[in-house]
Image (cartoon, rainbow, N blue to C red):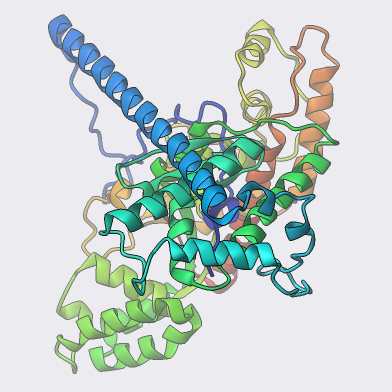
Length: 505
C-alpha cells in the first residue's frame, strides 16, 4: 500500500511530544544495571576549567549552525523552484492547472469517492482530467519502460513532482520541512495542526513507478490528508490550532523508545537450556506463523543460524550470544508487548502519572509553581510534578521510579547490562500490581480535567489553552497498555521485561 502519510502517531506508539521535548532527564541512555541490581557508578571526574576549548567548541557550534541554516535555505529554494517548474510545465504542455485536480470543491475531487482503505467507499470512473494528467506525467519519462533516477531527465521529473506535492500540501495546511540528509527520499513534512508526517519524494517515486491510475491515487491521498485536517478542525470547534513544531517530528527520528514485554521464560529456559537444537528449531517453526508473514525472513534467519550448531545438544552449551537469545525469546515465548513510547515521555510523565494515582484533592500552588506555568511547562507535566504521589517512587531508581532491587538480568552470563545499547532488564511485575490494580484510564483523564478547572479558578495562574490533554491521553494509553502486560505476566508467572528501542526514523 503506497501512502503519502507514512508516519502517524500509531506507527511509533503514542508519542505526543512536549514543548521542550529535547530536555530529557538523561542522555537517552539508562543507568547500567550491574549483576547485583545496583547502578554502576560512571560519574565523570570533575573537569578543570578550559576556557580556550570551551571557546573553540562554541565557535564550532556556531559554524555548524550557520552551515545547517545555509543548507536548509538552499534546499527550500530548490523545493520552491522545483514545485513551480512542475506546475508550469504541466500547464504549458497539458493545458491542465494541476492545482484544480486537488481542489476540494472541484469536479475531480467531488467525483472521486474512492479513498484507499476506507470501508464502503464507492469506486467511480476516472475523469478526463485524471486520464490527461496520467498520460502527460508518464510521457515525461519518455520511451523508457520505467523510472530511472540515474537518468538526469527522470531525476528532474521525480524531484519536481515530489517538490510540488510537498510544497502544495504544506502551504495548504501548514507544516515544516524536515531535511535530515542530502537524499530527498529522506525529506519529510510534519504538519502543524495534526500529528502526521509525510514523505513526498517517496510518494512521488511510488506514483511514477505505479503507471496508470497514479493521478487518481495522488488525488485521493491528498484529499484524505485534507479530511484529517477537517476532522481536527471540527474537534477544535472551528478553530485551527498550530500544535506541533519541527521539534516534535525530529523526536520521531532521534528519541529512543521504551517497551514492556511479558514472556514465558519457563518455556524459553527449557528450550534454551535443556532441549536439543533440533527440538528448538521445531518449536521456532511452530511458533513462527503467529508473528505474521512479515517476520518470516527473521524466523528463517534464526533457524539457519541454529542449523549450523550441533543438533543433538542444547544451544545453551554452544553459545551465549545475546542477540540469538533475544530473537528466539521473541519468537517462542512472547505473550504480550506494549506499544513503544518515547523514553523521555515515559520517564517524565508516564511513570510519574502511575505513582500519582487518582488524587482526591489538589495541592495549593505557590509562586514557584505559578512561575513554572508562566514559563510554558505542559499542563499535564505540571500536574504530575505538583500533585503528591500516592505511591512512593525511587527517584534514583530505574526509569526514575523503580528500585534497583526489583531488577534482575535475563542473561545467563549475568554481566553488566547496557540498557542504552539495547539490553533487556527484568522487572518484578509485583512491583506494579498495587499501582495498576485500580487504575482506569478515563478516571485519570477526568481527574486531570478537574485539575485544569482548578488552575482556571486560581486568579494569579496564567490563562493557558489546554495543551496537556494529548500528553494526558498518551499517559493513559501507555498505562492501560502496561496494566494489560503486567496482568498477563502476573497471571502466568511470566517475566516482565523492559527494553530500549532505537529511534524509528
